[in-house]
Length: 446
Image (cartoon, rainbow, N blue to C red; front, side):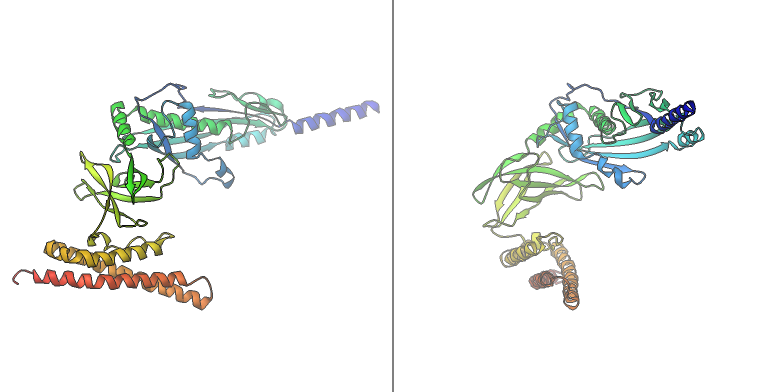
């Protein structure tokens, strides 16, 4: 009887151990590996990762969102891996990275085979992730210096058992990192299954290596020349008798990947990487022929109307200039300002005031000096602006009325928008009439 009870006791202990002996091991390998060359330099050029986008072929589970790489994490890690290349200085060449990701989950068969053996024998399951990394580094006029992409695959291999310790044995095969192992539910080595830990950190390192591989494909002399130009972009200015700083940079279109304009950002103090500008204005655009042409960007909060523009040197916008404008050019204020921001009302009210001043100060000169074709082109712009303003005004009025009828929201901002649009139309109408009258007077045969 005692022997029988002892046998039952030992059988119970063995059963409990089997149930508690969930074991697993995983390994990671990649076709692209970090070089470990912390002394690498590419001449004098320095870089900063300012943008990172990961595009997954399949939807990411919500629970995994918090483990996605961020631009901040990549830049911080890049500074550790390649201190001679990456810095947070504002004059560092900005880099944007796009990672197209495709995942091939090959773990289902391993789960089925493990089920046939009642979770006693482990079978290898693999998740292969394919990456296509595109790195953008733009030169002084916004053209991308990188014309190739970097491809690599990472493989996460895992096996596990439920009723035996066999799963704690290292997964066979090449491993870039030490194996992660769990025995009886207890971590034995590595950083097992901590998705945000070693595995994701290694993934960041590989992406940085892909970026560096792209950088190494660029001619070093081109990188140094671009870097020297960017170093000259911070510039001290005097506006309204006060010292400020500007920084000139191309604005790259996300659709075409090319720069179609240059913008000047203004700062109260000498800017750092994280400095927030108090104003940002377009000061140059490409013409139809592709050449860079200076344009005026007007500051709103100055005692006198002040415009920022740029000097073109060697065919490229080079330096920001600030000028007080005595006679506002009518052409610069005909188009309706952007009405999407929180300050749209203030912006429209200010623009209406300057447009009125431009009508009174510069219309007469414009009518004398502009060609007939120029007058007709400007008249067409004004007619289009009036149509857009009329539509915006009516829609704002309808929204205000709907708010009153439903008792929802504050209708005053919509009413104000409608009034400001109508005011602008009233300023434009006499300008349009004068342009058409002058153009008609110059018609052939008269």
